Amino acid sequence: LYGVISGYVRTSNNAAISDVTLAFSNGGGSVSTDTDGYYEQSVTYGWSGTVTPSKLGYAFSPVTKPYTNVTASLEGQDYTGTPATVYISGNIRTLSGVAISGVTVTFSNSGGTATSNSNGYYYNAVPYGWSGTATPNKAGYEFDPASRTYTNATSHQTGKDYTAYILYGYVSGYVKTYQGTPIPDVTLTFSANGETAVTDSEGFFEMLVPYGGSGSLTPAKFGLGFSPASIQLTNITSGLEGCEFTGFNLFGYLSGYVRTTTGNPIEGVTITLSNNGGIWNTDSDGFYLVVLDYGWSGRATPSLSGYNFEPAFKDYSGVCSDMQHENFFGSSAALMFPSNVRIVRSGSVLTLQWNSVSGATGYRVQASNNPDSGWSTLVTTATTSWAINSSASRKFFRVTTLQTPVK
View 1 (cartoon, rainbow, N blue to C red):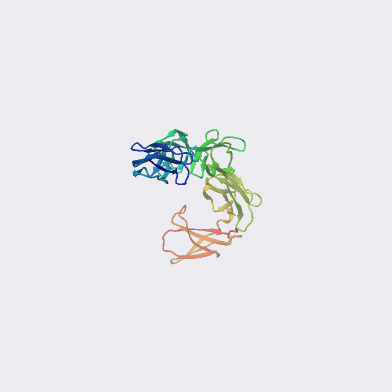
View 2: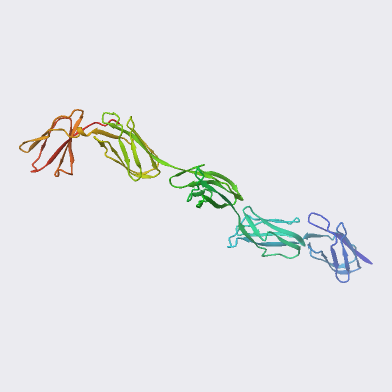
């Protein structure tokens, strides 16, 4: 007499698993599942033992089934098979050991993908016995090795590392004048990362930029302007040549009028600029325009025989723009000092008197202890006399004409 033990071996999704060997202990023999995952096996009447399923690349639940004193057929003796997996893992870092996150490792032949974490670590489960390649990828990087090959993976694979190398784009070009003359020592700055390059004696520059970087490339050199002022670069992933700039000299400007205090233009006034600024003359409107090297510093001094000017000079530092209304006011030297200046003493009161001057709008009274220097203004007046209390035994006075500037 015999008993029959039968059932199915399927996955958790109810897919049949064929060629699973079920081993019956205690002389019970063995049997394999068919294409439907079905098996059946006859055992002797009263058989006792265990049944254990097995197939390479699968784990089964239950692992085994025990039987005692089988005296009848037993159906529905099913098992659930789960494909076994193999884990492949490793780290992705630069040569200096910096972890690279966000690297996608693609496993061919339906092996799936894995992404490195903040520590550069990745792992992936592939089917037992899987064969294929694992290829890392991240924009802006290349890897060594470029991929790894696996054949019939039946055990876990650890330490499958990759070395990442940062990729760069680069930009290059020339900076020259409109006439084609190279301009050295121009600093070019890329806004995305602040990277700079300086032109050589041929006006050539070249710089590395971050892979995929976008930003503006801007030239700079003191005293020069550039066309274009900057170039906008977008998504640089390789070499970008031919970034050309034209440099031109920048200038500072001084301009203004030289007039009398009554507003009349004074033609032919020489404006002398120190520090190689040159010599310039006023036109029939009393106007002058001075073109200076960018950043010029120095003194502008007006002069014309027979005239005195207010101010006598103007000092400048770092002229880098258009400075207008730099006016001077001239007066005839003959009007500077009134005639017949005299002092009348009455006790401690000194009265200064002088003759009026045609064209003068007023007078400035100055005093000093030295006739050659140290003059200070005491008063300005429209009259031709002025009194002061003074007990000094010695004092020098002078009187000059005043004119109201017209601006």
